[in-house]
Length: 160
Image: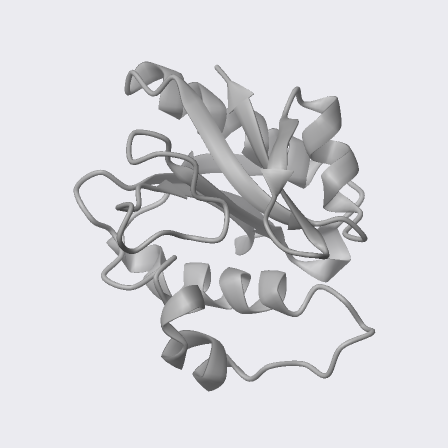
């Protein structure tokens, strides 16, 4: 596996990763790609990728993209699910199902954090459902719960 910066050519792949992240739980009926990308509260994570302040990384293996992690800043009047402040970008991350449990998510998380530090970003936020197994990864990586995003989710922040 190798990691590389996300580019404009990865926009469709990031949308696929977003759709997979939205549909992480087998307990819920899956939402279609069209529905996820039509809903403003989810489409905002990839619409117009890349904006000038966006940064991200893509994992590739066997010539295929197998995961991605990216950061996007949101304004207070148009926040993401894990919004904390205008100067704190929100993380979106996902790994292809067949590559989960192999360290790809951890590698992506560290790589996007390293890029954020290089860009002078001091904190990263995210929103995660409490039942989502990914929350363990975030705790292990030093993210802390700073509030409830909803009845089922937490907003977490990591100081870089």
